[in-house]
Image (cartoon, rainbow, N blue to C red):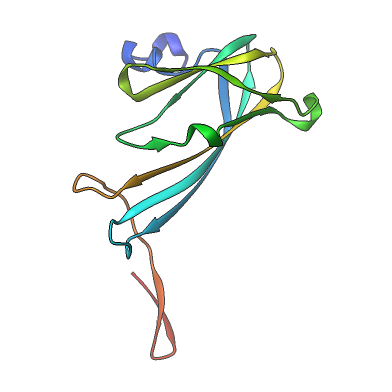
Length: 141
C-alpha cells in the first residue's frame, strides 16, 4: 500500500525518507524487583530514500528512552561513520525527532540503536512466556 493510500494519521506517522528494513528488539523484565520494571535495546536498520538530517521515531507510552545510549551510524559499506544528535524534539503522538550533525545520504543504509526502560504499571500489557523444570520435565506456560 502506498503512503498516499493510507489514512491521513498513518500517512503522517510513517517516515517518508527513511524506510525501516529490519528491527531487532531485546526486552528484559525484572518482575522480582521491589518496583517491577522492564528494559531493553532496539536496533533499526533503515534505508535512506532522500538526504536528511532528521530522524523521527515513535516512543510509546511512558517509555524512558535513554538519550545517552542513542547511536546512529552508517553501516560498514558506507564508511562506518557515527552521527551525533544536535537537537532532540518531543512531537505529538509519542514521536521523537532527532536533528543530526550531518546529513544521512540518499541510497545508503544506517543503523539506529538505543536503550529504553519503564516500570510495569496497571496499564502495561504484554505476553510472558516461561519455561521451567517440574519433575524432570520441561513445562511451558
